[in-house]
Length: 104
Image (tube, rainbow, N blue to C red; front, side, top):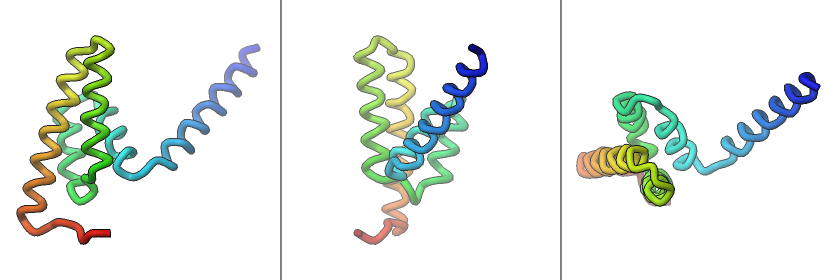
């Protein structure tokens, strides 16, 4: 029984990884940032990926904040909102510095 459970858990892990890799890069980055347990580390991830901050990324952070708020997780929602505001600031500074990526 344990062997079957372990096998199913491994299959589930692999499927989640495949799904995660198939997400647009902005959604992948948002997941990585939100998975950071420490807010300073999460901000560092945002700084390191400043060129990759796109609408998918910013919208995902905002959407997650709204979902957490709706589910009653005020602390999680506040953290996601702070990270969203921080990311918007990083994105705006990059654009003002002329680092804006060319339109696709």
